[in-house]
Amino acid sequence: MGQPFGGGQAAIEVAVAAIPLLMVIGSALYLRGQHRRYGRLVGWPGQLTLATLLAGLGLAVYAVWPLPASADGLCPVEPAPAPPLELRDAALALGIFLPVGILARSRFRRGVFTTVAIGTGLAVAVHAVRATGVLGLYPCAYNAAALEIAGIAAAGTLLGWLLARWVPALWPFGPHRSWPVAVPDRVAPDLARRMFGTLIDLGLWWFGAATLVALLNAYGIIRPGTQEQVLTGTLLGLSLLFGLFLPLLRRDRSTLGRAAVHLALTEWSLPRPAVRRRVLARAALLYAPVTALVAFGLPWFALAVAVLHACTAVVRPDGAGLADLICRTRVRTRSSLTGSLPQRLVRYVPPKEDVPAPS
Image 1 (tube, rainbow, N blue to C red):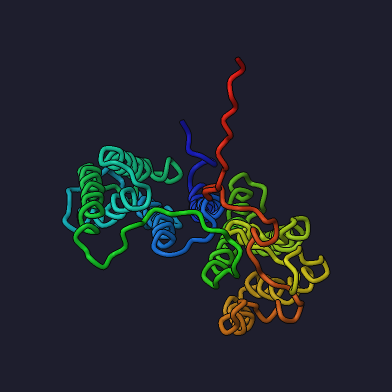
Image 2 (cartoon, rainbow, N blue to C red):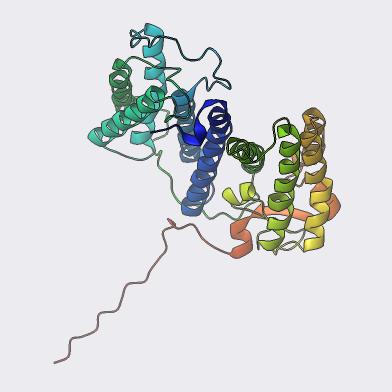
């Protein structure tokens, strides 16, 4: 069976762009599901929910690191035997899989056998990704590890489960409830939540454009030497599509990243969708200069635009940025706009009256 995308440097360029894109998409779907089920991520359960996301991203990075951008000098002339187990690799695997056991017990309330099975399955998946050179995208395995790492990973998962089981019982001041409970999502969103949405937007935009260009190049659609120009045009096109036109069609007036964390852009004084001319004006003040500066190789100036917008958000209780103050818009939660409640919210249902059976 041949390599995907014809193999060689073209397949490696696809891997370098697509793997971060898949990580961003997975993060967006995970956060969207958590906000839909439980509402705001608050307290210790909310922190563990975010820790689960970070642990998943860490596992993905651990499986593909260092993700070379070129095949030059990557594969040895003669196949090398499996490397011996080193203490550094064993400690790294133990540290990577320890949170898996902790979160499986504390956040998801899984039993010991289920947790060990999950940890073993993840360890086997990581080993398969490494042994196949990222599922065949690379011509050889560039970060092969000893097979014993899978057993150490399973042991780390078990150790994490035991720590989550016994340490809270012995810690007198620690939290005793770590699984989430649904909370109505009506208060003003904090800056961390808005930042997550912005980072997801940037990841989808940048890595999406890079992946599209890499695929076009792999199939020979792009002429040699024009990748930079095509990438710049793709960045500008995707910014118009997903940063401007798509929010105008959505009821919550949100980009994909903001929608993943259940945010909406509304009128200043009323929880109703912002009128389209205000959305256009806000995009022209905020997204347009950031997009143009990044696309043309001036990311530090784009960062200055973002800092200028956030200078008012960090001091105002409603978190309104400078562009929001100028355009008279406000970032609220999606629930405050639609009136929806979290799916896991416990609702009171009156008991049914007993109906006497017919005689």
